[in-house]
Image (cartoon, rainbow, N blue to C red; front, top):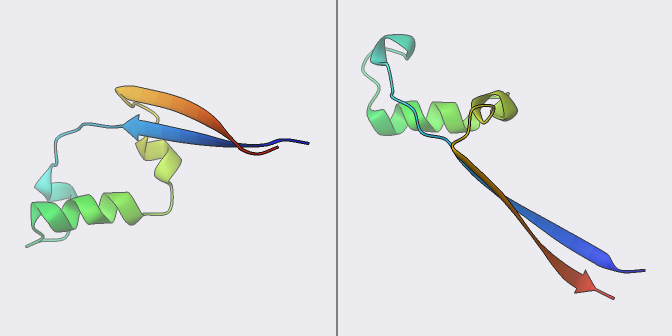
Length: 59
């Protein structure tokens, strides 16, 4: 049986709105909060690019 690897690359672009983040956070800290919160699929529900590649890794 063959083993396949699927690689998904998604791109999301949006504007940071500082009032929705803790006071004093930098843009880097805001982006990190978004990238590490629990519901990552919700963040990518409106992606501008979604590409899937595949490769056979074991035959």
